[in-house]
Structures are given as C-alpha cells and as structure tokens.
Image 1 (cartoon, each protein chain N blue to C red):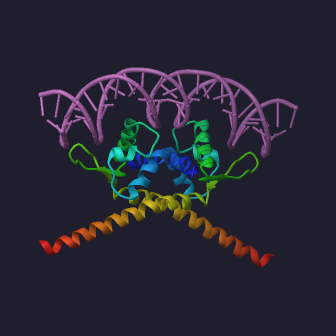
Image 2 (image 1 turned 90 degrees about the horizontal axis):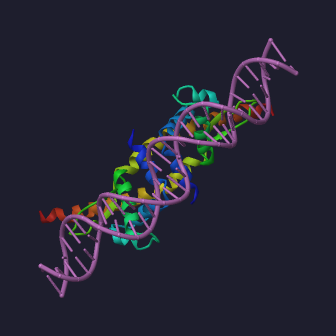
Image 3 (image 1 turned 60 degrees about the horizontal axis):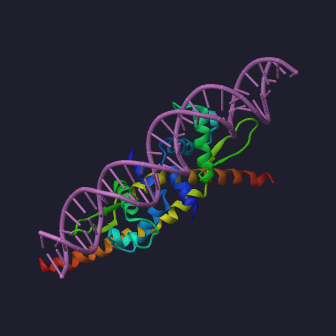
Length: 107
Length: 107
DNA sequence: CAGTTATATAACAAATAGATTATATAATTG
DNA sequence: CAATTATATAATCTATTTGTTATATAACTG
C-alpha cells in the first residue's frame, strides 16, 4: 500500500488538516481556502496538490475556478489500515483482561 | 491537537508502519525489530523514538532490553479526528443522494 | 482587445527527515 | 573485572518539505 505514505504524510501537516476541516463544511475554491490562512496563495495551492495526490481532495473545473471538496475513498483506506492496529490493541486488552481475571482468584 | 502532527507523520513512514504491524503480533525488543529490516540498529532506534513520541508505542525496561508494544490510546485519538471527515463525507453523500432522488422524477 | 481575477509553476532558501558510521552507556556473563 | 550484548546518541550527508517571490496561463469583464 504505497498510497498510505502519501495519505498519512498529507494528514501530518496542520495547515492541510485545517483545509480538510474547512472542506468538511462544504466545497470551497482555492482563494476561499487561502483567505483564513496567514499564508500566500502558492503555498495553499501546493498543500492542495498534496491533498489531491493523496486522494483526500478532488477538484473540478469551473471557468477559472477550481472548487475543491473532500474525496470519498480516502478515509475508508485509512480506516482499513487502522483496523489492523485496532484489532491488535483489542486483542492485547483481551489478553490483559484474561491475565487480570486469572490473577484475581490468587489475591 | 498538536499531537496529531506527531501521530500522522509517524504513520507516514513505511518502515514505521511495518514496525507497528510487527508489534500488532505482540511485544518485541529493539533487536527483534531490527532483524527483519535491511537497516541498521540506530536507524530502527530512531524510528522507535518517533513512534514513542507520537504515543503509538510504549517501551518497558527489562535489564538491558527495551521490549516494545503498541500503545492503547493513540488509535482512539486518530479515530476521533477521522470521525470529523467521516461525518462530513457521509453528509455529502446524503446530500448527493438527495440530489439524485430529486432528479429522478424529472427524468 | 486590455485589464483583472483565479490558479499554477519555477526558482530558491531554510528547516526537517532519514540513513550511515562511530562511539557511549549500561546490564549480563564468564 | 573483562568481554559481550542491547540500546542510545552524535556527527554527518543527502533528499524532501515548506515557505517565499516572481512569473505564467487561462478565463472573465468592460
């Protein structure tokens, strides 16, 4: 899963997470995304490129504007991988519960 | 949530994800984690440091060894943030479903 | 068509990441 | 206690990331 590299490193930047949070409220153009940040337009355009490459954001063309929105597939992919960790942690807890349960009688 | 930076960038590296996958199978010492990789021990120690700082891995001291295991809290924290995206995507889909439903009669 | 608006790209500087080798530290073992 | 084992840290190199300014492109507007 080479794409997890791109996805997780896209999520590692706070500006990009803020962009995603903004897009969670609904579609926005590049300039609308620039506005709330203390950062230049090229910087935001580069962040968007990272998010698009990671499959987290999709852009459509509307005249000279590029309205952006959240992509549907990415979160599922992340979840799939995290599921592995989740299951492992649950199993460890189960084991720990077992250990604790086994210890109780001795007390 | 400043810690999400550390968490997501820890997950962005394939070696570190492989380490987590290994730890999902159970506890391992540093040298046991080094073994399957074509990489030096200091490199793995550094990766582990990143994972520990991100709260994804915990180490205990056992003589000269440092057995590592998955930390329980981290995944929940990631899930919490992803939940925001999940909800947003569901909402978008609901909206899209609504739009499609509204369009159908016109066809 | 000239000017403006929306966005992308190039060139560059500073900071960070990831690996290596060499070395330090601390516990174990003979 | 000397040698070994397990791990960490420092110095160093290279590549990547993130921001900037300057500029290009392409569509709208009067």
